[in-house]
Length: 151
Image (cartoon, rainbow, N blue to C red):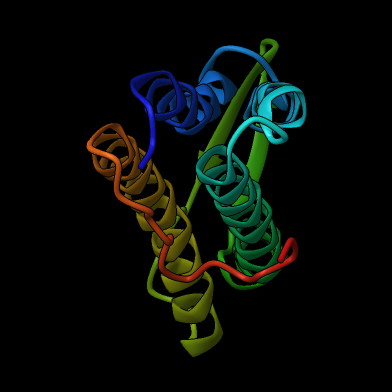
């Protein structure tokens, strides 16, 4: 049986990951601080702290991989396949012949990776809110797509 205090602490651990929208690396710092200070008090808090950190590390890993795929492909495709002429007139830069018709199949992979990255961030937000709601009701929540770094 989990107490209301334990439910609230576990919920705050989940919601503290949303601080990364305001504070860089807040999604790691705040959950680690809260979890490490309260994990001895309750098995429920310990379980949820591990789940939060596993999920955040997994999302970071997936984001890095998608960016490593998308960014080089899109930059290469832009500079290699799109012809443009830069004409400097009176300190103005004009780009002519800017066409998207020369984009190849490899660019589609980059576009898909960029789309998956954006989708991953939306899914992350929704899953954090869902986990916080489930935890506030006293349920153990296991994030999907989470790699178990902490067991």
